[in-house]
Length: 78
Figure 1 (cartoon, rainbow, N blue to C red):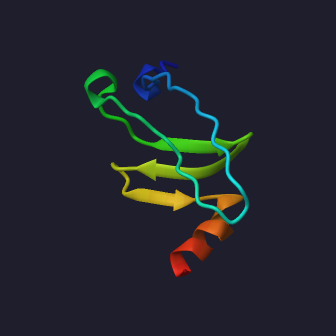
Figure 2 (figure 1 turned 90 degrees about the horizontal axis):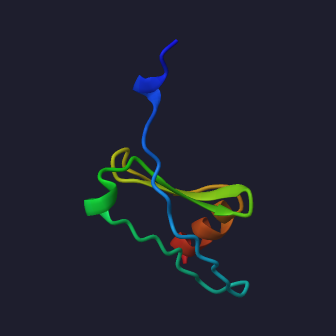
């Protein structure tokens, strides 16, 4: 079976360590050079091995997941 129609290029990204204190806000950095990388489907942030946020302009998705879900909901209500 030819899998080539299902393969997409994957761009290397720079990892960043983000630290914060409980109850404080933090920013999750993400630099995308569209001129070099071209179009992309989605960006995902991980805390250790758990995905905590997904962003996709194409799919119109911007949502927390996993351990960030509850704290994100609280910040929206505040």
